[in-house]
Amino acid sequence: MKHLLEEMPQQHNPTRTGRVMSQLSRAYEAVYNGRTKLATGAAGMLALMVGYHVVFGQNGLTAYQAKRRDARDLQVQVQELKRDNDRLKAHVDRLTNDPDAIEHEAREELHYTRPGEVIYTMPAERK
Image (tube, rainbow, N blue to C red; front, side, top):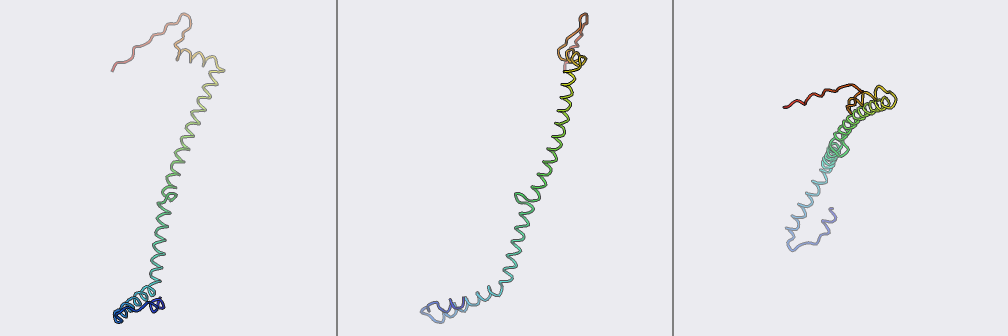
């Protein structure tokens, strides 16, 4: 940088140019001497940004926890559906093979009766 400052063309006022050159030189030295602080600050900011992304980013810890919670909820739902499915399969097997189950279902759902039986139906409660 110093050689660039020295190669700059001189203005009409040599004292003004000297002052400007002196200020630029001091600014350059300040930046040059503070480069470790600047690099440390930049590394710290980068670490903070990466840490924020790890915790709150699209695939961060909070998203991971939410996905695990959703997976547990879905696993519970799958277990409930499997139990319902097993119960319904057992009901179908009973209706297919057990004559008493078929008769019970016909009496309950279709209101069938045997000859000579009478069904009494109670009126629905009014609210």
